View 1: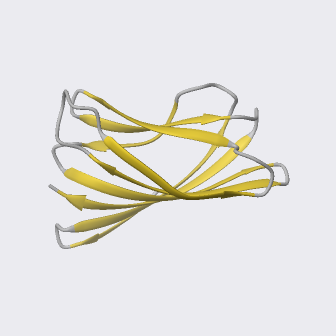
View 2: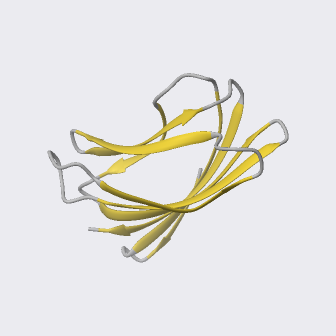
Length: 114
């Protein structure tokens, strides 16, 4: 993971994770006390199949479901994964559920602090 911080306004984080077929895998998390909104660019691959997704997440704090907007979802051979955002305590989790047993997900997160 690489963190690049420009003052206290935004940050950019890169993550690369090999997943298994289990549902609800956490591929990223952050403190809702520090970050209000994020944008993800994801690249997912499984064998010779590929998927690219962009999504935005905005939250209003603990106890309120985060808002998620998925767009630019393109693939070569069908959907490889689904994504969700969940708040638990003071953390927001990006939850990943792959379709296949061996899946590589790469994610770039751009965030704006609270």
